Image (cartoon, rainbow over all chains, first blue to last red; front, top):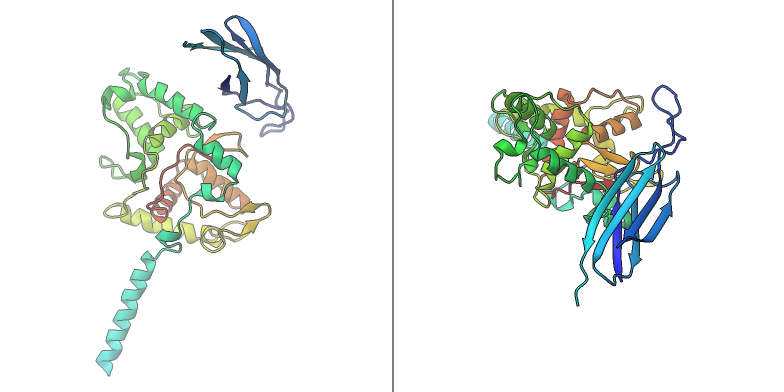
Length: 91
Length: 258
C-alpha cells in the first residue's frame, strides 16, 4: 500500500469573485484529475469550485509491479497538465 | 546639592536613551506567528510536501538557474556554488554601493538591473515571490539577525517611529495590537506579535503567496489607514524595525498563515 500526494499550482478561481473594477472573474478550476498506474487508471477526481487554490490531493493505492504513475488534469479553460513519476517495486 | 541634582538629571537622560532600546517583548517571550496558528495550519507549514508555499520555492530554484537580461546570465552564474544560507536573515540591510536600505526583494532587483541587465521584477509578481522564497528558504531555522548599526541606524529610528505612529481612521499604531494586545482575541483570531520571519508566506486569506509588504498593507487596510506603494522607503524602514524586534526568531519561509 502506498500513499500518493499531489500538489498542483492552480488559482482554482471560483467564478464568484469580482475583480477590482467589479467585473465577475470567470470560473477556472481544475475539473478533472486522473492518475494512471502502469497504464491503468487507479484514481480519478471531478473537482469543482469550493476547492482551495493550489489543491492538495492524497490517496492510497496498492503497488504490485514497477511502472509509471501518470497524472493528468484539465481546467475549465482547457489547459492540461501532466506529470510522470516512476515507481519501482522490489522483491 | 546642586551637583547632585545635575547628576540625577544626567542619569535620567541616560535612562531615557537606554529606554529607547528596550524591547516591548523581551527575547524570551518572542513567539513566531506560527505559535498563533491552529494545529492544522502549523502541520501544513511543517510538511514540506503539503506546504503550498513550496511551489514557489521550487519555481524560485528554477528561476535561479535561468539566464535573464541583456547579459544572459543567471543568478547561479555569479553565485556559483555559494550557498545563500544565512543571507536572508540579514535583510533589510544597507546596500554598500548605493548606501540605500534594501530588503531581499530590492536586492534581487538590484542584481537584475546592475549585473544581469534585466528588468526589475514587479513587486508581488510570481517570479519575485518565487526567488525571494527560494533564497529565504535556505536560511530556514536561522535566527533573524538584521543589523541596526552604522548607516542603518537612522533608518531603524525612522522605522521605530513608523511602528509607533497612530494611523488611519482607527487611530492605531502597530504597537497597540502587536506589543500591547498580542495573545488576545480580535474577533475570531488571536492577535500575533507581528513578526516577519515567515515571509514570503502562503496566506489562506489570499489563497496565494505574498510578501511581507503585502501583509503590512493588509494591516494598514484593516485599521483603515493609507496604504503606501510597494517598495516605499517607509515600508523598508518598518521592515528593518520589525527585523530588529524579531531578532533571534528562526526563519520559517515559506510560512503558512491564516
